[in-house]
Length: 441
Ligand code: ASP
Image 1 (cartoon, rainbow, N blue to C red):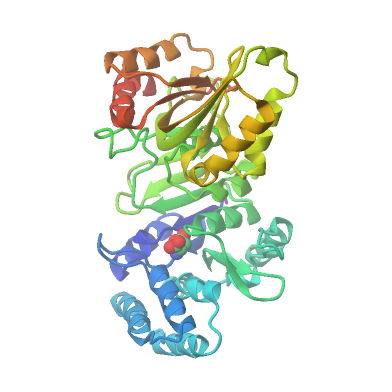
Image 2 (cartoon, rainbow, N blue to C red):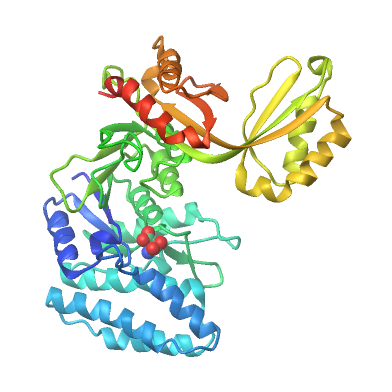
């Protein structure tokens, strides 16, 4: 039998009604043997995630303040779920453990992890499946990095002995036995780890959207859902701001070639997005996969005559940035000019130091910084041998009367990146989308 690992996100498990939907999906296929659960998320726009309530509880307790109201709100969330599911589960006893913990040296990660812990236990009881605690099967090293080798072995052995199981997402254990969490949204990572540990044929990630969109829906009306995407394309688009999945969720399954299917718990008939290692030749005729972008970059521009003859000039410039903790995004160069595009936020803090160092060490003829740049990436493996894609991007921008500030084509030819002013960002994305839409089919 092929094994599918299913992970449900916070909105998919926010209430008894949502959990029933998720369980219906799990029961819909016998392949869905292992489930990874998030903590209950928001039931509506103005609701608060249980994880946020737990952090708040911890912070109040750590500051010696009264946390009883927040803890009562958490208890209420779980009590409502248990009542709605019609199971017997002693929520009060679990909350008593947390109260006790909060009164004596509360630990932040431990508290945060209890949303996943309790939700997974409740869902396991409802499904009649064993609960496998991530604190016994997901291991971190002393520095807080995932200990993949040990985790895949121990978790794999544990699950191999079970037909089914529910595993809480988001946390694991440090070598000293304390609970440690991934960064926010980390249940995606747990799902990927479980899929890898059991060598699943598929990792289904159930959320509240019908897959990854080919552009930001806040900018483009009704963008297409991406049906297939490779891990590399996903990396490019995510880096530029499109997000459906925790960044670290890709590596465990990618190494093992396990595809990820992003699905919508509220629209289970939608096929969602398949994330795969490679799209076989002829697998799709699509040329462009998606468009994404981010605002707030800065360009450092340096000019020096005979720069091209000065060995090590670029290296020294980049070194100055590295010394100040600034990583560079792009680096288009001319004969006697060099621009370095950097992320705006951190750079703003160290800008004066960086500029002073460049003047001192490189004695440029001209040095300037332009802020307020947006980077827009058009991504698609299908563009590799296609002629005229760049021309289309430039035409779209010319039609919108938008000035292009920078052009970069990734070395893989899988993306074209253009820089425009932040004020032109939305119009640029819309224009490029319109021009490229027929290549996305
Ligand atoms: N509950 C955690 C969070 O809110 C982890 C997750 O949902 O993936 O970040």
